[in-house]
Image (cartoon, rainbow, N blue to C red; front, top):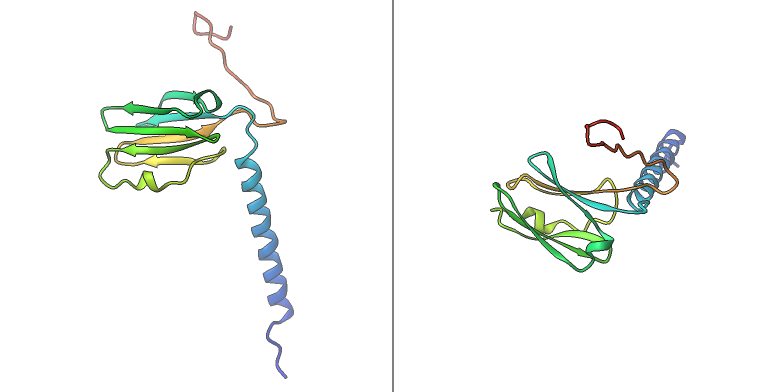
Length: 136
Protein backbone atom coordinates (compact mmCIF):
# COMPACT_ATOMS: atom_id res chain seq x y z
CA UNK A 1 0.00 0.00 0.00
CA UNK A 2 1.39 3.40 -1.00
CA UNK A 3 1.16 6.49 1.15
CA UNK A 4 -0.64 9.50 -0.27
CA UNK A 5 1.46 12.01 1.68
CA UNK A 6 5.07 11.76 2.79
CA UNK A 7 6.30 13.31 6.01
CA UNK A 8 7.89 16.20 4.10
CA UNK A 9 4.56 16.88 2.35
CA UNK A 10 2.75 17.09 5.69
CA UNK A 11 5.44 19.39 7.13
CA UNK A 12 5.24 21.64 4.06
CA UNK A 13 1.43 21.81 4.25
CA UNK A 14 1.50 22.61 7.97
CA UNK A 15 4.15 25.29 7.45
CA UNK A 16 2.05 26.84 4.70
CA UNK A 17 -1.08 26.83 6.88
CA UNK A 18 0.78 28.43 9.80
CA UNK A 19 2.24 31.10 7.49
CA UNK A 20 -1.14 31.78 5.85
CA UNK A 21 -2.86 31.97 9.25
CA UNK A 22 -0.22 34.36 10.56
CA UNK A 23 -0.53 36.63 7.54
CA UNK A 24 -4.32 36.62 7.80
CA UNK A 25 -4.14 37.44 11.52
CA UNK A 26 -1.62 40.23 10.90
CA UNK A 27 -3.76 41.69 8.10
CA UNK A 28 -6.91 41.48 10.24
CA UNK A 29 -5.25 43.19 13.21
CA UNK A 30 -3.71 46.00 11.14
CA UNK A 31 -6.96 46.63 9.30
CA UNK A 32 -9.06 47.19 12.41
CA UNK A 33 -6.85 48.87 14.99
CA UNK A 34 -7.49 52.54 14.39
CA UNK A 35 -8.70 54.77 17.20
CA UNK A 36 -9.34 57.85 15.09
CA UNK A 37 -9.40 56.93 11.38
CA UNK A 38 -9.13 59.49 8.63
CA UNK A 39 -9.87 59.14 4.95
CA UNK A 40 -6.94 60.81 3.25
CA UNK A 41 -7.50 61.85 -0.36
CA UNK A 42 -4.55 61.96 -2.72
CA UNK A 43 -4.73 63.29 -6.28
CA UNK A 44 -1.68 62.95 -8.47
CA UNK A 45 0.29 61.71 -5.46
CA UNK A 46 -0.38 64.82 -3.34
CA UNK A 47 -2.65 64.95 -0.30
CA UNK A 48 -5.55 67.31 -0.99
CA UNK A 49 -8.05 66.48 1.80
CA UNK A 50 -8.18 64.68 5.14
CA UNK A 51 -11.60 63.70 6.52
CA UNK A 52 -12.31 62.31 9.98
CA UNK A 53 -14.52 59.30 9.21
CA UNK A 54 -16.65 59.56 12.37
CA UNK A 55 -17.36 63.25 11.85
CA UNK A 56 -18.53 62.72 8.26
CA UNK A 57 -20.80 59.70 8.91
CA UNK A 58 -23.68 59.59 6.42
CA UNK A 59 -22.22 62.29 4.19
CA UNK A 60 -21.41 62.17 0.50
CA UNK A 61 -18.54 64.41 -0.56
CA UNK A 62 -17.82 65.49 -4.14
CA UNK A 63 -14.21 66.13 -5.07
CA UNK A 64 -13.56 67.67 -8.46
CA UNK A 65 -10.02 68.07 -9.78
CA UNK A 66 -8.34 68.71 -13.12
CA UNK A 67 -8.31 64.94 -13.66
CA UNK A 68 -11.98 64.23 -12.98
CA UNK A 69 -14.82 64.13 -10.49
CA UNK A 70 -15.20 61.56 -7.70
CA UNK A 71 -17.85 61.21 -4.99
CA UNK A 72 -17.10 59.36 -1.79
CA UNK A 73 -19.57 58.28 0.88
CA UNK A 74 -18.99 57.76 4.61
CA UNK A 75 -21.23 55.02 5.94
CA UNK A 76 -21.03 52.62 8.91
CA UNK A 77 -17.52 53.79 9.80
CA UNK A 78 -16.29 52.98 6.30
CA UNK A 79 -15.49 54.88 3.15
CA UNK A 80 -16.44 53.91 -0.38
CA UNK A 81 -16.40 55.40 -3.85
CA UNK A 82 -19.96 56.40 -4.71
CA UNK A 83 -19.58 57.92 -8.19
CA UNK A 84 -16.75 58.67 -10.59
CA UNK A 85 -16.58 60.09 -14.08
CA UNK A 86 -13.70 57.84 -15.13
CA UNK A 87 -14.25 55.69 -18.24
CA UNK A 88 -13.77 52.23 -16.68
CA UNK A 89 -15.49 52.62 -13.25
CA UNK A 90 -13.23 49.98 -11.64
CA UNK A 91 -13.05 52.13 -8.52
CA UNK A 92 -16.81 51.75 -8.04
CA UNK A 93 -16.43 47.97 -7.68
CA UNK A 94 -14.15 48.33 -4.64
CA UNK A 95 -15.65 47.28 -1.32
CA UNK A 96 -15.96 49.90 1.45
CA UNK A 97 -12.65 50.52 3.17
CA UNK A 98 -12.76 49.91 6.95
CA UNK A 99 -9.18 50.09 8.17
CA UNK A 100 -5.57 50.98 7.69
CA UNK A 101 -3.45 49.57 4.88
CA UNK A 102 -6.47 49.70 2.60
CA UNK A 103 -7.03 51.99 -0.34
CA UNK A 104 -9.44 52.67 -3.16
CA UNK A 105 -7.82 53.88 -6.34
CA UNK A 106 -9.25 55.54 -9.45
CA UNK A 107 -6.34 55.43 -11.88
CA UNK A 108 -7.79 57.55 -14.70
CA UNK A 109 -8.59 60.36 -12.24
CA UNK A 110 -5.32 59.83 -10.29
CA UNK A 111 -7.50 59.64 -7.17
CA UNK A 112 -6.61 57.57 -4.09
CA UNK A 113 -8.50 57.16 -0.81
CA UNK A 114 -6.23 55.88 1.96
CA UNK A 115 -7.34 55.16 5.52
CA UNK A 116 -4.88 56.46 8.08
CA UNK A 117 -5.01 57.16 11.80
CA UNK A 118 -3.73 56.48 15.26
CA UNK A 119 -3.04 52.86 16.12
CA UNK A 120 -4.28 51.59 19.47
CA UNK A 121 -1.49 51.15 21.95
CA UNK A 122 0.96 52.69 19.53
CA UNK A 123 2.82 55.94 19.52
CA UNK A 124 1.46 58.70 17.36
CA UNK A 125 3.97 61.29 16.23
CA UNK A 126 2.65 64.58 14.89
CA UNK A 127 4.94 67.23 13.46
CA UNK A 128 3.62 70.66 14.36
CA UNK A 129 4.98 73.59 12.45
CA UNK A 130 4.95 77.03 14.00
CA UNK A 131 4.56 80.29 12.14
CA UNK A 132 8.23 80.35 11.28
CA UNK A 133 8.04 76.87 9.72
CA UNK A 134 9.83 75.23 12.61
CA UNK A 135 8.77 72.96 15.37
CA UNK A 136 6.75 74.96 17.71
